[in-house]
Length: 215
Image 1 (cartoon, one colour):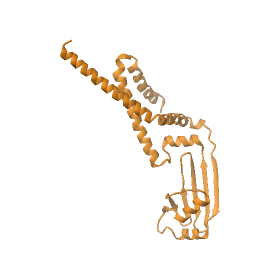
Image 2 (cartoon, helix red, strand yellow):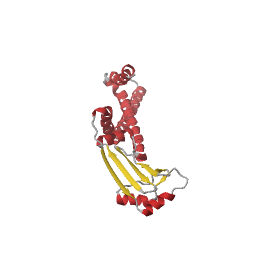
Image 3 (cartoon, one colour):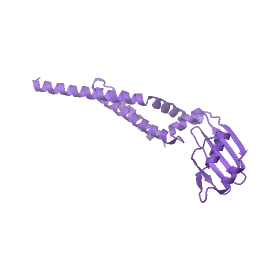
Image 4 (spheres, helix red, strand yellow):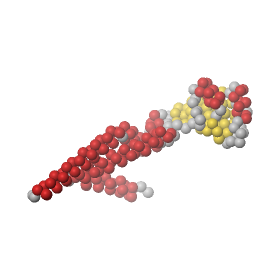
């Protein structure tokens, strides 16, 4: 081998070692960042796939009470010309103190007869109804259990902006983990002849299942 060829070979080897170290670094960092998320989404993927076989026992709780006259007077005159608006501050404070119910600035549906506020959440549902004339308030909450809660986290159902951002960032980390893993496989495939057949099997199998068994 000529000196020039030897130098080129050494440069190629150094470049390969650099990229391999970089890929390994990004691979383990992305794996560490999305480890808990991958475990959560893997487990909930199984529970969602067998949702009909997993028995859920919803627990329903309810409360009913008449509002004080001062609050009823506020409900008869607000909000003018609006079909949806947050509950008055005084009413929200009363709900928090009397029922330990925090509704925040959510918009409720206002009709001439009543106010209806939907309070969905992961793993359950709830609603609040208040008669505007009489002040009769009724609240009902349904809890479907922790499996339903985790399933809703998987689907991003009623989870809010922060969790949706987490799902996007988690998906990005999974993409980095998968792509860097594929590139590492490519760089090491020469010493492992079973690499590409296994990769091909992993690609072809779901395609065949979708084409043959899903109608």
